[in-house]
Image 1: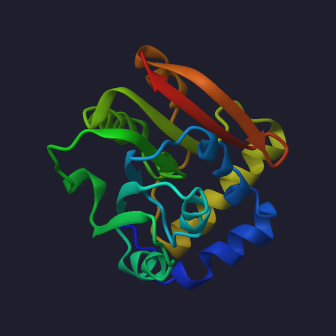
Image 2: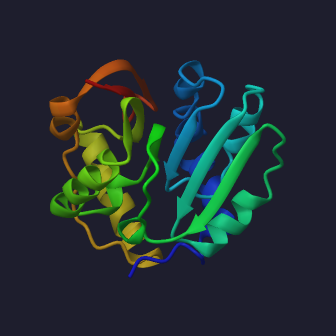
Length: 203
């Protein structure tokens, strides 16, 4: 079973070192698409370093913030907010159930933890939580990779296999899942096009 608790205190610094803070920068496009009163489901937010950027919008936002690492949630809780109401939940997302419908779903470096079949199952589960006119903010490693990117991905997966118990050998293909029910309204790439930040709107 995957466990981020050991690496949680060092994860953001490690990300900054390896990806030159571009993992963090890849979150910024969503800031232009949020509106006051949005209900957000954020899955895999980790240590919550981006919470402060959301706070700067000075919007009243309501966030359901889910991560399966208790240490990551502990770190995220330390981010100070006045305008944002955050409900922190420690849970495996596959165990999470709600009757809520969300205006925004954020999955940032989430699907890269799962085999294709589990990624598809998770996509369908989250899709059921989406409002009819909602947007999905998806950030992850690009699907069509060049040789150096494939090498880096392989090394990264091997590292996380040792550190957190990640058990995949390749990234799932997500683009085709979104194409059926969503339109791309914004897409940007970071770290020499290795990281892709996409904003999808429900059709």
